[in-house]
Image 1 (cartoon, rainbow, N blue to C red):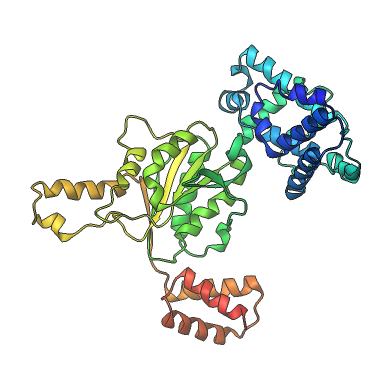
Image 2 (tube, rainbow, N blue to C red):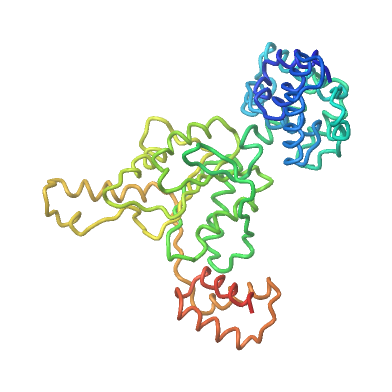
Amino acid sequence: MTADVNYRLSCLTVYRHLLQDPVISALRSCLDNLLQEGRPSAAASDAFHSMVHLLLKRGLSFRDYLLDLIAHDDNPFSRQCELYGLAACSPVLQQAAARDLRILQELYMEPLRVDLPECQELFPLFYGPEYSQEFYPVLAGLRQSEDWGNQLSLLADHYRQHSRGLLSRYRALSWGEQGLQGINHPHLPQMRDLLGYESQKEQILANTRQLVQGFPANNILLYGSRGTGKSTMVKCLLQEFHDSGLRLVEVGRDQVDHLPELVDILSDYRLPVIIFIDDLSFEDYETGYKGLKAVMEGSLRRQPEHILIYATSNRRHLVKEYFADRSGPGQEIHTQDTMQEKLSLSERFGLTLTFPPPGQQLYLQIVEHLVQQRGIKIDPELLRRQALEWERAHHGRSGRTAHQFVNSLSRI
């Protein structure tokens, strides 16, 4: 790998964003310093070891790291392929993408030649084990190809199926002050482990199935007692619809007023997305709910059909309402308008699923299921008695209480 390759990298057009990647940037810095100094230097050594450090953190060889970057890159070519297919890409765009891929193949194929004697034992990182993710057959296709410029169709199919950027790299994401970010280790419960509430399961699965199949579907409000599994049921959808490419984006209640911005970003992707808002409710003086109303219905821009909002709440009407709103004391003349505005938010969820607190039998079934799942040995009658004592002394019957009780048994 020589200074000539470094110059060729500066000619990237479609895949130019790769030059900002810290590993590629460190490699270029190393080569630049070697070229300028003409001999080993501290700057070249520092850049080289920074690059190796980043590769070790990812657990990938340089070659497979490069393939990973290509598979996830968000650029004009990958965007067009995802949204409209290869046929929608202009000849100029296809030609530029093919040219860039041939440059990147040079980087992939050319042996590393860096005159840093103390680094020789680290060079095998460039030729390490094959990429292990069977999820992306495009990686094997590039590895075996003699000309990456002829693999536009393979890459186009990949981007069409798996998307690009953050949405291709992460199944679960969050939206906050830093914008859209991926979640490396999301909580992915299984629907079969959520006992009871069979009707609610059927409805949320049917609605989500319509979403991932490209049919119109409803926003959902999951309303009911605390600890009854509302949030868990939404998280289960990632496992249930993994093969359909479903993505889940969690939004905090204090970020709801930024929903129009988030929806604008997600509109530029093809994969089905659920925006998940947990514990949604508003005090009467808060106005963030107006942004949520506008996203679901009421603004000039339609809510994209591949994006739905699933929210959980312990409050049926979401915005706190007072008797004064109905009786009319105070300064406001049109009190009925105030009441209707507050009620209209919950009405924009096309489907409302209610979660009452579990009865004693269901509560004990959850406890027994968790005990069996964790392999805890305990007398059934003793388990039943202690479980009932726990719920009376703590937070009442709920799935959360059952989990907390079984957690206490795990320490015995």
